[in-house]
Length: 496
Image (cartoon, rainbow, N blue to C red; front, side, top):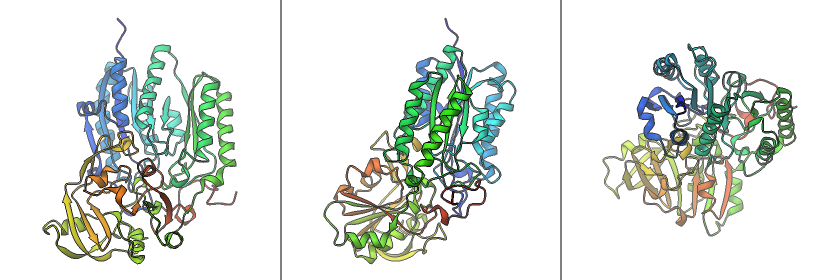
């Protein structure tokens, strides 16, 4: 009977926006310890997908710890050190007994107070553990990872999502596990090679259904098909709001073949990205200019997309730009979500149907105009929890099957519905509205705080979709951001 492969599992997932004022502390992480991780097996998260195929492969799963938080500000060092302490205490006894592999669920754009490259730091620490230096180390990464030389040095094979919105996160995690199984059965161990051309794109330029990512992903799949020694070709669009030396577009190849061959393919990808660099540098028109062209508002649902307050990119989700424009233009049958736990708290003792004047939004970023005082009617109140309608959505890659917006209320100001949440929630699933008694298909206007990942939910129901520029920390105009650490020169910050 063949030996059961012993595989350590761990997760550390956070996309860090270093230009927002708030930090991300330990309390904001959902933490699973030891056997608690096994409860994810089969769910829609990357960890759930990897655990499911691990059971099929017959591996002996050795769960350690999983830390997961929504995108946000600079991660406090306590998070990194707590993760490491708990991982090491769980992993060392297994390593002493002997393990065959290590499987990690990572994001790839995590920055803490002391470490610009948290994933690279953790990988290097793992390699320094007794008996871990030569263990096969595989895992899954977000497409928006800012890949680094340390990641390439200390991992054998990390596989990035291939789609944005990230509808393939669970499948990619399973693909990475299948490659680890291939390594077990063939006895071959790949190594990672990496290249980072001097360019970065805002999240609005990184959708994989359009250029330049469409051509880059197609070329990557072609290169995989042409050479069986190349196990995976990763196209990493980077996360431009995480200020670190390696911020930006990069490519990574896991290969068991010639290093010269792999580096040639990396250069081929880099050249294509450079030729298409302007297509990825997407910026938006002002909201005023968009609404002027739309007036009078045509029939059907209009979606106004606000990348500058992109919740999925780490923004506070309480910007007032779209709300102010809706009020100014007297738009009716409209809706927007604002993350404002203070406003929610003030509404808890109010009767449904009662009215109150309170400041809404504008508290999370100094770039915003500040809270807007509105007289509103309380429409509904809930605990803010809902089940994902789309189990393959981008949101599923972050949270699994269920979402917790915290205590939430819906208020109405004239013809505008405002969903107030206590926990910022990426707008990637229509269940966010329907759970609050609002049918999004019957609205005339919805303001969405996103860049690209909302499209799987909203494309099928929108008659038209316009990206608008408003004040906020996730501006697509990267030249407005105060970079300090990114290696220069780099496009589009510099003339190259």
